[in-house]
Length: 209
Image (cartoon, rainbow, N blue to C red; front, side, top):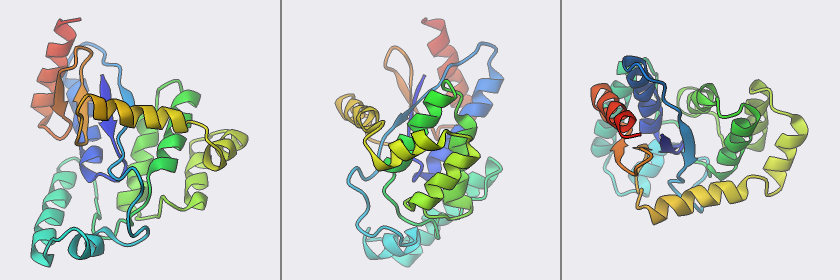
């Protein structure tokens, strides 16, 4: 299964938890490949600003509209055991982080669910600025990544092509929202669908292999 996500998206964290529960409900193994879809490929207009401020000053939402959306996200997160402070989550260009996640994927042979979990928690629970290279290096240290490879990834072009290819593939296959789970035959389901819906999708995908 390909799972398209951006760490800036709170529903992607919620979807990760729902996918984990859905996988536990079915008897057959499910291999997940994590793909990058950038909400803002060229970065946000106001990096570092809290999301709530951006929503009401740049996205055209009233304070009442944003509070309703924020409350809905917080409630959905709580149902999955997550504490999501979307209001104070700072805006950031997620491209360098996605490149670091690709490095982690290579180093861990694809076993990166805990890495993505940590990235989401850093952003939405601790509200650290993932656009800060020092914060990214701290993440890489927790993930036990090689320092020289981290330096190459964050200061050079390592994994830039892979992230760009993910973005291009998403555009070509008309994946426009995250999270999205895509089966080998191209069928897809929203990652923030219910756990039962995701489990049924996984079972159906397994039956056609």
